[in-house]
Amino acid sequence: MAEKGTGAGTATKRARKAVAVDPGEGTVTTTAPKTSKDTVTGPHGAESVDPATLPVRPGEEPWTRAEVHELHDELISELDRLRSEIDAAEAAISGLMRDSNDGAGDDQVDAGTKNISRESELALANNARDSLAQTERALGRLEGVGFGTCESCGQAIGKARMQAFPRATLCVQCKAKQERR
Image (cartoon, rainbow, N blue to C red):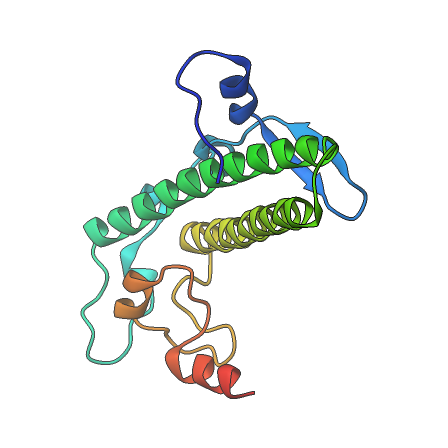
């Protein structure tokens, strides 16, 4: 993972930028970092969600406004955490890409270690991007239509499952079927 700078040096400034790396082409593109305000605008947010419209399984208590607010806040904080994690991983990748060109005097072990480090950071960044996309989708479903409804069978996913894993898009039965395939 990337190390954070303690001063106001250029390494800290670089770590604040989101750097997208295309490993196939070896190109680096910088973009402005997103904030939670980029995703949630206008009349959206926890206030726009009517808890009575969120599905629950038989025997479960209906959603309350406090539970919806808590879930919404959890998703927003997860977005911020994932964006920070992606920024740090991309800064580390950028540094590893720069360092890979400076291999003078490296033996095969050093080169292999650098490759493994780079691939590890790329995998971490890609996993964080996937989680970010799932979290953004869950937030969109919560504020819009479809949150708590299984995308496969159309039944309620279940309040307890949604509280434990708000990014869930399948009920337990459909997820089990999917994993058996």
